[in-house]
Every structure is written in C-alpha cells, then in structure tokens.
Length: 94
Figure 1 (cartoon, one colour):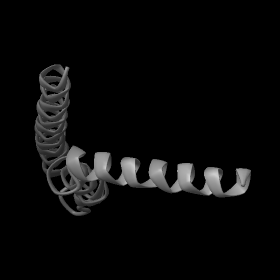
Figure 2 (tube, helix red, strand yellow):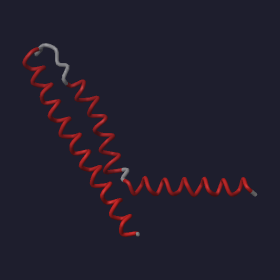
Figure 3 (cartoon, helix red, strand yellow):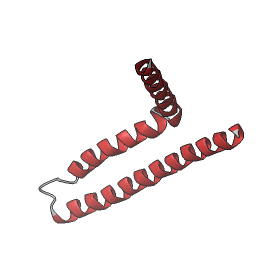
Figure 4 (spheres, one colour):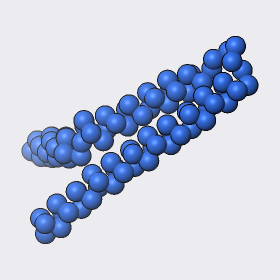
C-alpha cells in the first residue's frame, strides 16, 4: 500500500510540474504576441509590460507553489494540523 501511495504522490508532483511548464509556455507565447501587437500598432505608448508584470506575479506564485512549497511540505502541514485538531477534539471530550 505504501508503494501505491508513493507512486500517487510522485504522479501528483510530476503533473503539477507539467502544469507549471504549460502555464509558463503560454505566458511566454501570449506575451510575445502582445509585444508584437504593441510594437506594430502603438509604439509611442508601451503597454505590453502591464500584463507581463501582473501575469508574471501569478507565474512566480505558481512556481513557488510547485517547486519551493512542494507537496511534501503541504502534506506535512496537513498532517500536523490534523493531529492538532484531533488532540484538541480529544481534550474537549474529557
């Protein structure tokens, strides 16, 4: 059973990394198109960097959630909070 759970956890990690990669590639592609549109039609007023910046904040937070605050950290935090709630619940019953 542990091997199956380890496989499922590894699969979730790989899927989240693939999701991030797809998100990042779409970000690059769309912002490149926005740059070309901005360059071609309104050179005097540069606006393409607004979506680049604000969407970039979203990309950065997605990166952090996938690679820095990984599933292991999340799982440990969930387990700790569940234990805390169980202890609190058991103390209230006494």
